[in-house]
Amino acid sequence: MSFNVIVNPGEAETAEDRLAQWLAGIADTAMEHLEQLRDRVELRVEIALDESIVASNSQELIEMRQTTEARPAGVQRLYRKRFEERTREIAERTADRLYTEYRRRLAALAEDLVENTRPGRNPGSVGVLTVSLLVHQDAMDAVGVELADIRDSQPGVQIRYLGPWPPYSFADVPEVDS
Figure 1 (spheres, one colour):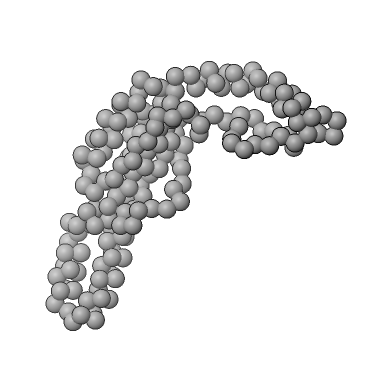
Figure 2 (tube, rainbow, N blue to C red):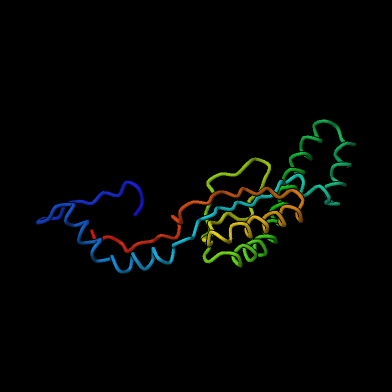
């Protein structure tokens, strides 16, 4: 169960009795699930793209930059804003294109995969994929090798590789009746 779960007493039983009854009721299922998680770890992978690096070879942006430099200062400001928007759009299109490939590559190495939402992002970058992977301890190196290949093959890619942790994201237990 997650942190800070409170078990309330029932009308005729204590909170401890309710917890013991619940644990007894799910014992077989919980033990089976824990056995499936034995020797497994959770790895968190976050992949993003640096907007400026990804868009740096865009012919449209190269021409826009040249056009901007020839304009008066006030107009340059408007062009810079449009330049930033186009840079972000190009990076987002690239991220959309890479998402399926990266997800497939990581899923092939994992026994399970859970997509996570990341509350914020680094300025100047666009997210591609944020996942938790359930892998056998022996497969951790393969995940690292795959991420190194992704890093080496995509200019501007930013990778956070965290863990190993206990497989919290994969340790669901039956709901508690209120």
